[in-house]
Length: 120
Image 1 (tube, one colour):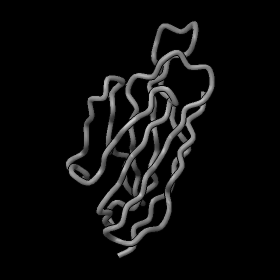
Image 2 (cartoon, one colour):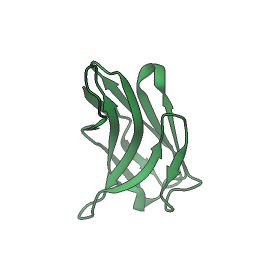
Image 3 (spheres, helix red, strand yellow):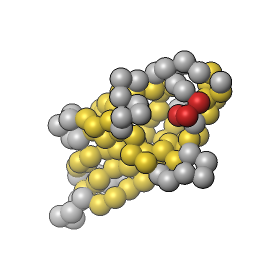
Image 4 (cartoon, helix red, strand yellow):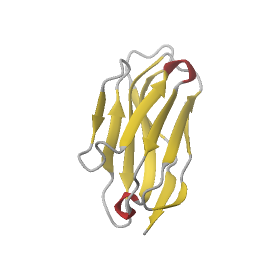
């Protein structure tokens, strides 16, 4: 199983970006799909989470600006980021709790990270 993140880039303050993360491989089901970010010198923090049923969680710092979604048929999650601020600058990582055929447990899988830079 692999997670491939894309959509990062350089944008100006107030603009938008949409991140995507596609899971590929032999997959039985996916539980939570999350987005984390890690700024320069900082710790990795949870930004948004979306459960298999669609329930979402957002960090206070992004509430009202970011929207997580997923397409279960495509094993893909998205993060729509609006009204971006310089403090949103970070490497964004996607995560999935994924069960593969023959396994009884969901296991942790991470994407490679995509850089988002917001200029002031």
